[in-house]
Amino acid sequence: MINCIAVDDEPLALSLLKDNISRIPFLNLVAECGDAFEAMKAMQENKVDLIFIDIQMPGLTGMQFIGSLVEKPLVIFITAYKNYAVESYDLAVVDYLLKPVALDRFVKSCERAKELFELKNQFKIENSAKVDFFFVNQDYSQVKIMFDDVIYMKSYGDYIKIYCKNSKMPLVIRNSLKNISLELPVDKFIRIHKSYLVASKEITSVRKNSVFIDDKEFPVGETFRVNIEKFTH
Image (cartoon, rainbow, N blue to C red; front, side, top):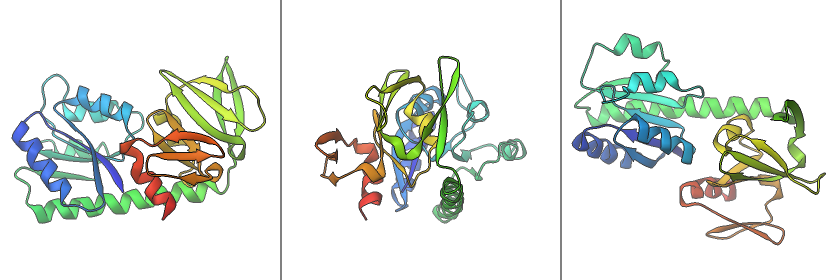
């Protein structure tokens, strides 16, 4: 599944976009946003793979918002204005759709996004096979952590506690689960909740709303349930 958000300041346009997204079986809409600032919040709270976004919005335009992102998900602009098309492709967007968007054109755009999403994930998996560690910043140092040593990570506001096999105390770093998950191989780690990321090989059992590592139970957030479904099938 591809987690996506829809961003448009016009309620009717947002409703139509939501309806189109619901027709695409591989899309999972995690948030509807009325402006770029709501989109920022949604991206902090969810793993977002694809953004459908209008360009002309009050406060911060869609173009400005996408340009400000350090880690960019896939982007499809949906707008009533033709004159931003060239500029939009400088941001390496998937597509540029003009309102009103015909359903067949929307489907074609989504299929293109799906192809790019799968290529991106395949690249991560292939590269993760070559590297078995990552670095985190702590106390002005770069600390090396082996993938196989990690049991799980828990978010505490602006900080993360990383629980490892070779340490009685967790490693505390200043970061977000959203950011760190982008650096980790998707075949080794699963985001199961806004506050938890677990090593997939450490999972011993799964229930509808819980994941277990031995006798320790972890909650599964509704937004991240699709990650568990992919893991168990």
